[in-house]
Image (cartoon, rainbow, N blue to C red; front, side, top):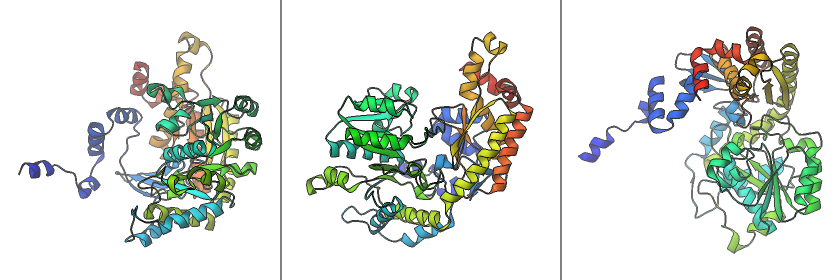
Length: 466
């Protein structure tokens, strides 16, 4: 009787479907993360979205929004892509998780990934997320090389699990969890000479790098950087790990961003968009000889495993996603649309001094904002500039969502940068809408202070209390 009394308070699927905004807030505040609810509520970001399709999402009041955040690069095909859903339906009824056997869908997706990367990369390990992909890549590099040291870039982002965090280049995320995994050494991103000097010290298994730094602020390295990195890694006999978790599967105008420099990495990490925006799936693909050195014997075959990695439904989603990407040439679409949008944004930069930089490739674009200068910043002893660096992009994102129905956000390592990563199926008309919205915002608000005041006294008050 007592058990039944307790269970009657359970929330059913039908109950959850009928939640309103306050129900969502209440449960999230009480049982998930109260601080997140408070933070998102400051800018009215805690909307209750009830429907999503393609580039559009809808709140409980029926208002339409264009998604320019794109799941941090996970929604290359948009929301609820029908082709991916149909592909998954065909796999329903098959064993989804069965460790006493091997999976036909995992083998099929692994072959497709090898073909997609040009055939030089062959062996795939499947996991569930980008962080797990990085963990696996670091481990395979260490066991195959017999070395322990890992080089990584300042301002990088590779995940928040312990191994991935140890090669994520922002002190804010690392400091609370130290000591981290030892023998991880940072180097300046885009500086091939600094990398060469570091690797000369010896003992390195691998260098892990993003072809474009996503959370670092959409930072594009100097032309030819990856080609020089490839040569340096070869010279010192270490493995090159390229993290394509955010840049992969057409996002930057290439199927993988490293292809712009015409190199072949030793190991490539992938995740996010390969699941079609529906299923969590990630992993890495490595060269044959690396895999054989690491796990190529019976006694080593199961040294690194994942319970849900390579499950049937996730791999079915991956197979369908790649088919859709190739069929509709979404990489080429991303290149064309990205060039169009960057051109329009550069026109805004010329018009408004508050826009410091526009950078990116394909549909992975960042807008960086200027920090306040002049007498008011001096009066506040630099406080205005400090606040602007931390919150200006948030205020812009709040304006875009609440007044123009456009969803975006700042980059984690550089909160002064707005990211624009819409689904690759975005229409030119939708690109024009965000350009118009930004133009209108900066026409009416010249800087952080005016935008903050315009966004509401409560926001500014909350910021100054921190």
